[in-house]
Image (tube, rainbow, N blue to C red; front, side, top):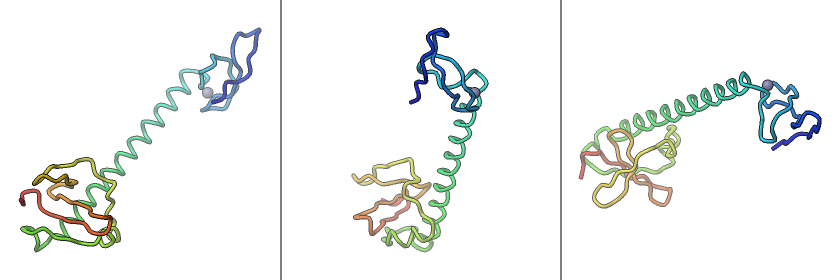
Length: 131
Ligand SMILES: [Zn+2]
């Protein structure tokens, strides 16, 4: 963190604003020259968070599509597939947000599908209604 240069006569620290890079005099922990730059930075951060959330949702929805396609014809079964097979289709196991207990085991839930990843090589997939 840049604390800046102490200016005794101004009783503040001189340093560049993190947004506009203009020098300003402020408190030791102040990082923006004023309200406008602080608001701009907060807006940028909010926009970045929104993009990140969107990316996560898109990846999550793609995961559901991949599992749905993979399970065509296996809706009433538990199917084991290699992780690499799903990953080459774009499956992203980080894009999840929900764990479900089924039959005493914890599963990741993607829409109507539950998966288990064992030893990072195989994925067990089943429909959420399947015991
Ligand atoms: Zn500024």
